[in-house]
Length: 257
Image 1 (cartoon, rainbow, N blue to C red):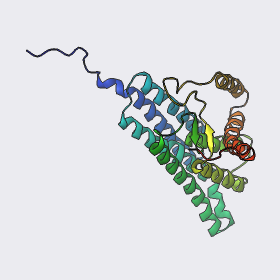
Image 2: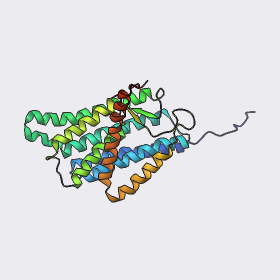
Image 3: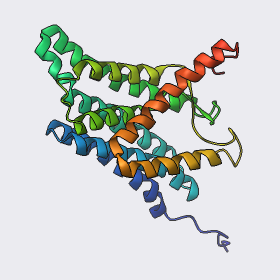
Image 4: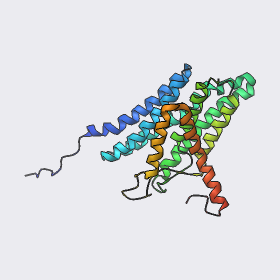
């Protein structure tokens, strides 16, 4: 007579939960592309930030519910490519880089090639992260994380649009911001992940100071959301090179192991 199992297998329905958040982030990126093509840049930028929030939730939900799967990892990576690679590139293209054609055929090509550079660097950043995720210190990111780069692009467009500047007027600063964000993603510069220890059960815990900073940022968001987001994302993007220069000047190791 067969013996009954002590613990029945977990129902597959629970695996929908983290993937629903991933799908929500994918929808945010897709919506941002559609909105940007229609000239609704504020809505497009908000959608990218919503995708970023959902991207931060899905992994934690998977760990809390013990529903991590290889499918979920690959699906999340593909969704990130749309939300933080294609969407920011096309938002910036429709807002400013498309106007480069006003300066001639050659510079017009530079406009869309700059958008492609950002999307390609985002893809390379995600591929490198996936291939090295089991061998790096979880306290740090190697290169600017794609959600942070997308936040920089989106907050720049949102802030300038909110201040009344057109993309046509700022097409050259837009190229600079896009190229810098793209190159930081594929750089070897180390960025803080705001996590505690790099290994063990406390690997995903956030330091107390990070919570205080996040609370202050949330309060400031009520005053001027796009400007505060631009300051936060630009400050984080600059933190990597600044700390790298400090370590180099003090003679410390500048390349991660």
